[in-house]
Image (cartoon, rainbow, N blue to C red; front, side):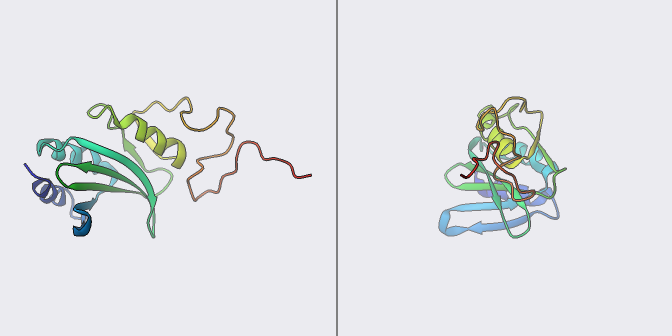
Length: 150
């Protein structure tokens, strides 16, 4: 199986799925809704694509997005727009245990709700952090302890 086969199947997953190809980077990208993430992972696995390179948070012109980067001789990225504070995604840790670190980072730094993921303790921020998600543009957040200027 190839990334190209998986890419064609992913495009069929939703009439709203959008294809963004980066030929110079040897990567394909598909935009999907949050509820299409697990079906997309199933398609990747059915096409023998298991290697999750990383999950990154990025702002595009309109939304915060989670990018799920996979690799098998070439890259394929699932772009999931986080439309608002209520948008959540399912954890991948049941099928990809290594996703834990990346998902915890997305939850803590961007304030993204990852359903099924235990985020009761901080992994990256100090225990005394009082602000919100530091990488989230909206709402603006402040550090837990601001130094007073003399």
